[in-house]
Length: 147
Image (cartoon, rainbow, N blue to C red; front, side, top):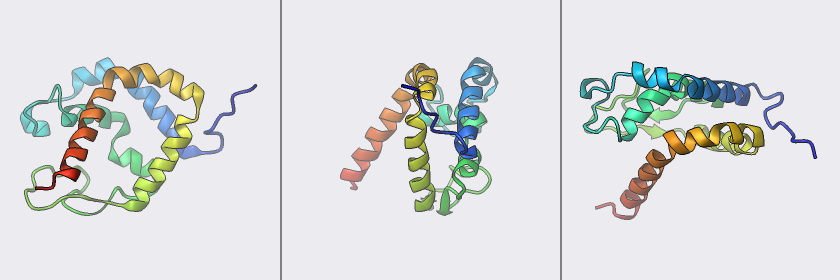
């Protein structure tokens, strides 16, 4: 059986694949070049926290790239402009439901591309999986323990 490419004729998914490949290919140089100081990313745990990892990933797959891929702005309101504003103590970014829905749809399509998954899985497991699991667990803790 021939593996059907799920990104044919879909420029946004082709862009996502290209950016993911560039991230993976240039990972060591990106890690060396990104400033993880507290002043830069506002994190006390830059090597193990999601902000440090995002600072590295955003070089190829940041919010602006994802907005281009998806075709919608990520936020409908909140403190974020061209960069994420992580200093606000009173405002949160409100995600655009259209952005999240389309991103989810496109990621499901991309994950259906066996060739992409095979090429990216080891990198994902090594460099992102643990961060996302902790973020997900924290989200669920807050969701079910609002106090």
